[in-house]
Length: 308
Image (cartoon, rainbow, N blue to C red; front, side, top):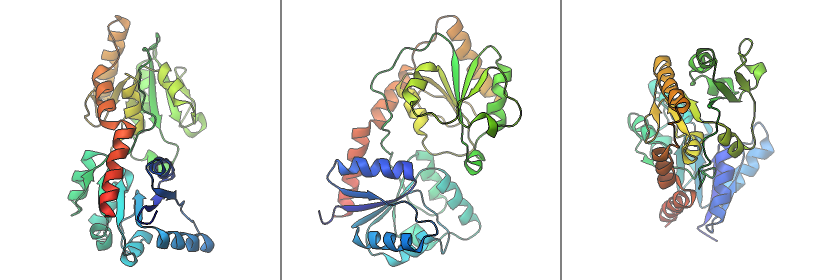
């Protein structure tokens, strides 16, 4: 197995998923969680880094003297950084302050899970390639749209992640459309400002997303910055309609309150007239470009080339 030992660091959801998937391709893949403040944890991590043939970071810090900067100065083995959104935003802020580490720019191979992140990194002097991550929640078949017009909105619990979401617009929508049912995840009611309108259900964390997608007609996601969101792709693969800040095939592009309301009103009216069908364009695009086996094969081939 020499040459095929890969250590994955960074965001746990993506890291654990990718370690599992790469193992099916013959890699000795391991995900190592952040050791926190444990000296023993850092020792175990250092030993794992020494044993690995390639390091794969999903998300990274880019400031001088960050743990990543120190790591890249020391290691003499291939390194990949897969940028997924907020990490690129933080790196841009470090670049603006003149704190971007040269080792982070030069040492790794850089991949991005969204094409617009390639442009953001290029503005910092970082050459990157658009390489998507496997979306294991993609659906092969689309259930019919539900009889009731229901809208899904996403608002993260973590205050840092929430900063890039248009919270004001998302929470104004239920009052603008009192006849429409809204479901909000993963934030629970107690994390939201003020009493909730009667047509907004805050469900908190949901484990069965497939069942939830069957309930909804539209997914609304509004951010000032983003990577390629899995929920957008999962919803599209099921023929659901998506209103999103970034323009994508099969997605209704809307970046402010008026545009979102106009898009949602049009979809609701088409539903009420019995004219709203499955989103065939979005469904075809998501399945063609993000099918997990195809995406994983691309990552596998790139990693094999990287380790020779």
